Amino acid sequence: MRRLSLVVTLGVFAWAAGAQAFVGRSQDFEIGALNRVDWAGGAIGSARIENQARVAQQQDFSERHSRLSGVQTERGSLTQTLTASGPGLSTGRQAARITGSQDLPVESCRYAPGRMQQDLGLKMETRLFKPSGVGTVSGTQTYHGAQEQTRTTWYGSSGQFQSVEIKQSGTITTENDIDPTVRNSVIVNLHQSQGMGPQ
Image (cartoon, rainbow, N blue to C red; front, side, top):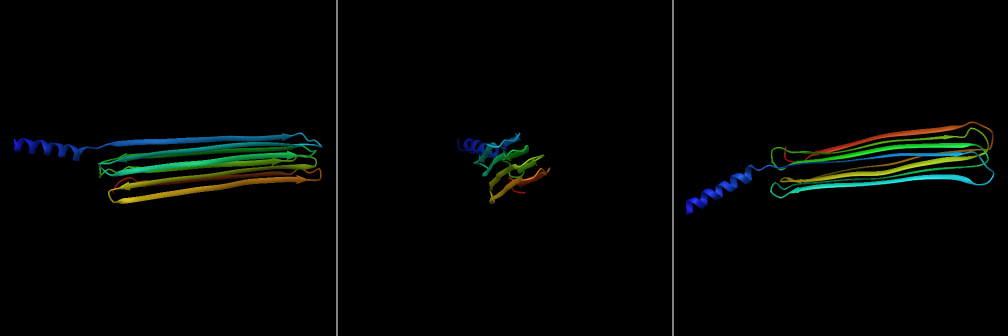
């Protein structure tokens, strides 16, 4: 009876040592925003338009047998504002495209680590045009974003963090019949990755 019990116990240990598990998770987001104002002119009044967008994502994993765990978060906030006033014609255009992704692959086998990855892409453009007359046209775009990931293995834990803060603005104020144009653009790409297990 003791011999049978010993054989069964060894069989259970062998099964647990050879067990492997794989988890593959990914998240993506995209923000596309367009802001536009056309002011035909007027002695009284003004025009104002605003866009706001916020995003937040999180994913996590833990596996108690291998002691592997990982957490990824990303968040961002976009604001666009355009204003125009005065008796002259004014136009303003704003465009923004933000994309973010995070991948969390985890293998519980100690000799086959996964790799956590995060990416953020940002493109913003502002164009202001005052073809004639007295008046003011102005625009501002701001984006605040952050990505963070942490991992824990048999050998310890580590973390990564990256953030971006961008402000884009322009103003045209005239008192004469001139023809100014203001245009600015910005492109940002961020990437970070780290292994999820021992190398």
